[in-house]
Length: 473
Length: 111
Ligand SMILES: Cc1cc2nc3c(=O)[nH]c(=O)nc-3n(C[C@H](O)[C@H](O)[C@H](O)COP(=O)(O)OP(=O)(O)OC[C@H]3O[C@@H](n4cnc5c(N)ncnc54)[C@H](O)[C@@H]3O)c2cc1C
Ligand code: SF4
Image (cartoon, each protein chain N blue to C red):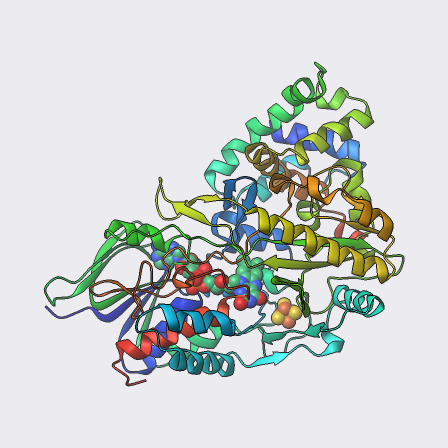
């Protein structure tokens, strides 16, 4: 039987778009499935979330707390609604994979990382384009004598500092999986983007025959596509559903990089919505699993992210022009799992925040709060759902009962679900889960990375494409 | 009038926020339209519970949210926002998404 395509790729996020693009550039005919719509900039961030985030942004994990987890459902996947920050995978992690995962080629992987870096046109945020939240935090760190704060590297070309990266970049300057990989690949003529189509089932190849993909169209139509290979790139929350259906034990090992941000109120005007929101970062030398990165939500999103209610909430919203915020994430020791009792689109997430992660979270909020107070903030708001979360002085910050903080009180979010089909656990170093069925998205990341993961995921995808093309690309 | 609309009106009156230009019902409907069916269906019952049941459960007062003293309204909202039970906080979020969106629609950029 003749295949309909050489490869069927499910998902157009970091993993799917990059794999599809390289396969197509290498001469393979590729069908790309994407159930989400094409994103257009929205003046209201809440609308962008409703339209382009999976489950309208309502995906959440439950366990010893409430853990919302954000992923995209749009052409370009989560990269269309991400901050654009680029970090290479940690050296220690890659070295560990080389040691522990048979066949993992660290040198080739590092070369793929550099390839991604070039393709995304990564550049460091210029100081003048950084949002005022970042500038104020840097001022505070300087006053405290903390060194090492720096501007971050981002995937962009011509960024105007519109500050809406997570709600679809209005200028198109941010490099996404769609703009950097998929769109150029479409020009080769080798890619058929099946917009509105989703994978229903992956069918492994039998006795050297073809693999298959059962797919569903926007009007409920169903087809089965035969191909040399089916590539699962539906993201860490959906891909395990398809893997379990073919007998793989996927879904455990979920890490989410629990993240939170501290708000700070100044006398001076901040207008934190201007400039690049995730412009700067720093590490805590005494807590290397903690990473600090800029984070600012536009005013229309603020009522939902500020952990206050009623008139206390209104007071912060009224003063939002004078509010700065900065975030942090934890390379988590805690683990979770994802199940799908009602299908791939409705993940049921269990997650337990480990005690050591909770301690890092409190350390993170304390560090940011102290820096903002040193920078002259009148008041800081900790990401805690408890009545004593507003702090006015460094002394009050020190006196705060940090030991009493519970995981269930944290106002946190996971932006980086990873690891549900971990390399070395569920898939081998060839990223094969079954004959003719491959995985390349965040689910294959073998451990909590501790850095924003898009570059790592793109790199896994380039490696997979090269291997599938037999070294031709 | 919907349960969500009633709660939104009471919430806005308490927080001193104006009615959206197009009215609460239309604003809420527009904000709910892109949400998943389960979220749209559960927001109403959650709002009903927050307005009628929560004052009794959390403050021991058999009164509607609308009829509480301002300080008690704040206390009730804080109990919901600061709930440690993930499901309760999640349910409150289902109300907050459309209601706060509608209530603060005219309050962009801290204006
Ligand atoms: C708000 C936010 C900010 C972030 N900022 C950064 C950052 O600055 N830097 C960074 O490195 N990372 C960032 N990330 C994370 C990063 O963008 C993601 O980790 C990465 O895009 C994940 O890639 P992926 O290929 O695993 O999945 P995704 O990019 O999520 O793509 C999965 C795709 O599969 C599609 N899909 C789902 N089901 C099906 C199906 N049945 N059939 C076919 N397709 C399907 C989805 O619609 C989606 O398009 C951020 C994430 C968020 C939420
Ligand atoms: S800061 Fe603005 S222009 Fe730059 S990437 Fe983000 S949204 Fe686009």
